Amino acid sequence: MTASIRWALHYLDSLINHERQLPAGPLPRDLKLQRMRLLLHTLGEPHATLPVIHVAGTKGKGSTAAMIASVCQHAGLRTGLYISPHLVSPRERIRIDSHLIEKHTFSQLVRELAERFASAGHDGSRAPTYFEFLTVLAFTHFHRSRVDLAVMEVGLGGRYDATRVCHPILSVITPISHDHTKQLGADLLSIAREKAGIFVPGVPAVVGAQRPYVRRILRRHGRDLGIPFIGALRWCTTTALSTTPQGQCFSARTPCRHYPALELPLVGGHQRDNAATVIAAIETLSPVYPVLTPRAVTRGLAHVHWPGRMQYFDVEPPVLVDCAHNGASAQALARHLKKTFPHREVTLVLGVLRDKDLPRIARALLPCIRRLVVTEPRSPRSLPSATLCYKMVNYGAPQPTLLHSSDDALAWARTHTPVSGLVCVTGSVYLAGEALQGLHPQFAALAHEG
Image 1 (cartoon, helix red, strand yellow):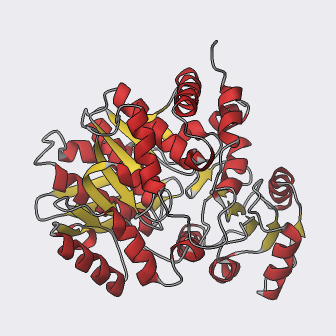
Image 2 (image 1 turned 90 degrees about the vertical axis):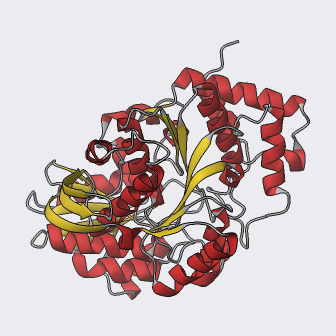
């Protein structure tokens, strides 16, 4: 019987999903990687010969992974990309050369893996979680599709993340900041130690922009393992040349090369830092993969597609959709609003999850806005809109409009914002995905698959 996408999505929804409901305390670690290894052993170790670029961090890891994959693809390498979370459909998480895994392939693999795991006795405490299942599915798909390499983004943390079973040829850590503190630790040093758990003896590590004491922790951990350690922003310096709401142009210089004009369809100085990390990563790998040339870097950065990250829609009024869900990301968004839209009247549509650092998000964004609409993303972890409204008023926000439905919130914002203004939707990956369904036909189609 042909597996349907609806059955596959229903099966995935039946699995334990820590993205929808995080545990109150530290993530359960006992046997987690052992369970992953057992699942992969059931399938014949599809990950064993797969060269992986492993990407961890708090901020920018998805953007960095997408850029690395785009450069590798434009170098002529068949490249897998595994990211999380998704905006609308879990198919977004698994891609080869920028193409989402096909519906039929995805559905068939979900059914095949479910049946294999059930027949092998992987039920009860041994059953995979939602993220583990999709990680195994990604390894299997990449193996069968004979990719040349795969870029794997860590889901949460690093040391005990399901992706940690991979065999990396390069480890990358993007900026580390406060997020998931109940699961990873209350301070940056504890979080950094968890992220550094992806380091593997003998495998080079490229580390993006970090606070000095965080960088020292990462460097010390790398030294203990005897690995080559590359500080990306020391290796690659960038200079902004121009910027528009849709992207930016900058130059870059490394000890090896000069890139006089790089186009990047992603905005913000933080994305330029992420691009520097990508360039450092690519140049670290180029002796092994000679096809990773400056031309591949130029073409890959220019053609990267990473929706929902300060994504600008030229409608009336314009809409900016972003996934900022912690203090550092909100600060980056605020800098972009002040620099790129200094005279715009901004209506903020905000919805956040209960476990996020709302005070820091509010402190960053409130100076930038004229009016506020609060809503709830469609997630069990959402902070109720009434609670969000009360808290934002206490933080000094203008009197909010409260609308429980994100669709209604966006419609209200677009109606009540002048065409010379700007609607900014942010606070959650879930909310960004819901907004994109009404703004981008690809996401509207993905939303109707199930």
